[in-house]
Image (cartoon, rainbow, N blue to C red; front, side, top):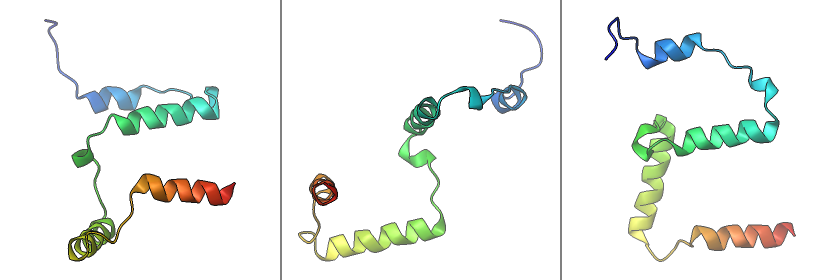
Length: 83
């Protein structure tokens, strides 16, 4: 093990600079996607408004569980309408 002070990872990361403009837009989006996918759901903070909306939707579902539609079905319908 190396001797010396331990630096927090954010301290190291904040001094490292990378010129993202050198990446294509597709590569930057891919990087964002990979970073996002690396997070667990409980690591993504919700705003109070988002939490309230999720609770409202959950309450609607509990009151009438048969009312909703599967996401894939809704997305397929949107894609069909867009052509």
